[in-house]
Length: 265
Image (cartoon, rainbow, N blue to C red; front, side, top):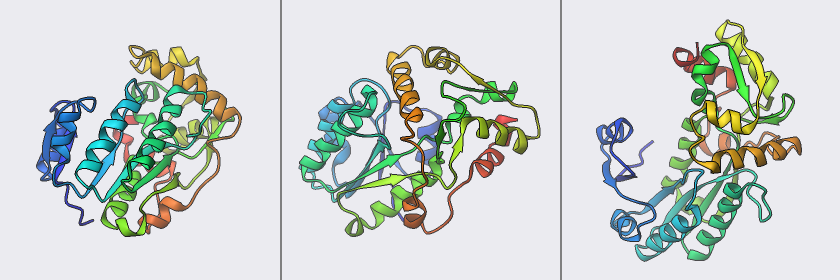
């Protein structure tokens, strides 16, 4: 990968920003809801990756980002959206992703919208529970999805930003290589880690409380809606777009678990 990371826009400096700094990135500390902060970060930028968390302010932040990108003639944007992005989404966060896609499309800045399946990293967020022998989820045991590792998403982002002429504005479904149910994933964890893992379904409210995310009501609301989306099969189905873009196989659930054994076992 030859992409030069000129700058990384962060809310605060911490170990994560230090890692990027050591890789040669300029660290810009600011607020995505402050247009002057974003304008300053966008100067002399050819391509930008935009990812906003599952919380309030997503649409406003997108409007600010799109305006700044347009003012500075950014050649390519990659936007982190969701697979279930649609105009009548149940989840406020998912609906905000769809609205953000429309804002970016109207900005005139070429934008590749990555409609991403559930992250494999959710297993890491629940690592203390998995280490205790429990696979905790708010979703039904037989609900199916196609987890993808963040590192594979990053490779997709790099390929697009390095080759903007091949992408421009388009929607790209992004999934991992293997579809699983939640009960199957709990079995995969047990088999790969060589220990007993008990599947346990809890309410979305209990799930976010265990993960320490209960301070923001947006998370519980999102998981309640995604539970229904999964019951309807919306996150099911493998798409090969990501593998074709990066030109190599993506991480399977087994490979992801094995790579993070030190955190999960």
